[in-house]
Image 1 (cartoon, helix red, strand yellow):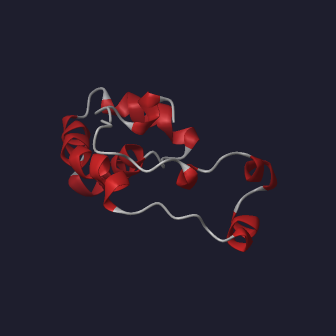
Image 2 (cartoon, helix red, strand yellow; image 1 turned 60 degrees about the vertical axis):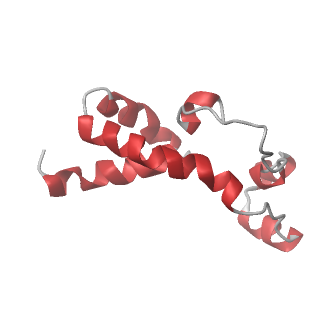
Length: 103
């Protein structure tokens, strides 16, 4: 696979690391990841930044009007990610990808 042909896979690696890869693409990317050293290395390179993100910003609760216009009706009843407790120094995060830790 040439570098340009592989660029979309590297973008998928970023989305996968952040837990934002489309659900329909996860299995395909995991299969690709089994044999792609380049994407494996990309995920290793991204891991420290991904682990630092939750601690890099203070959690914010969006205004109700934004929630009402941006979430599908069924999602409004569930607890959004941004209302979780902020990380504390004593808490540690696994090094696995977001898809592997049940989120």
